[in-house]
Length: 256
Image (tube, one colour):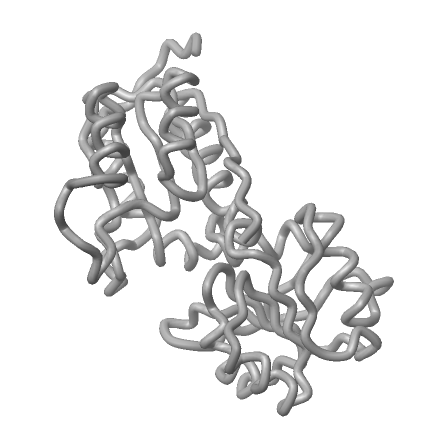
């Protein structure tokens, strides 16, 4: 990729662990280096999920390391290296590519995190937090032209490239907005308790629909992948500036 600068793998991981404050979190997966590759990193590829498609794209792009939000070794998954897991790991190991994955620490970071970056992308200003470890964000939409839930839904479609599923009345006036990226439908009750009248997340579950309707809260399900594209991209850009390496974000489309 033409970069003359490189960063040592262990130094990069130490820096990431520090700025993302990984020791704060009891997560569902190991955060940090999940698969060890070459010791020096010149070119970093970032993406949402370490799928085979993203790995192959990173190989084609000449990556020394792959930085993702969704990595491997989730709590409760089959530990055997067979089938799809074998295929993914084999590709990484054969091409000596490091896999760095950060889950909750990336959601939480106040500037580079998924919630912060989604807010910046949609023009929402946070002034509060809710939920376990203050994972959820609370605030208002900055643009005064966005007056209703329907206005916000159209804005989300324009900014994220897909129409959110809207539960509730599109004509409902916007007031306090809560948001949490990814699979945070189970935080709706905490968002309501914190004062949210509109809630944004990536996904929604069947019981959550009833809770939203009965509470009179509008719920906008914007897509798990779509809400978590921006944190890892911002983190990769930050690392490129910090260490003088090259970085490319590769978006393997996912409609969910």
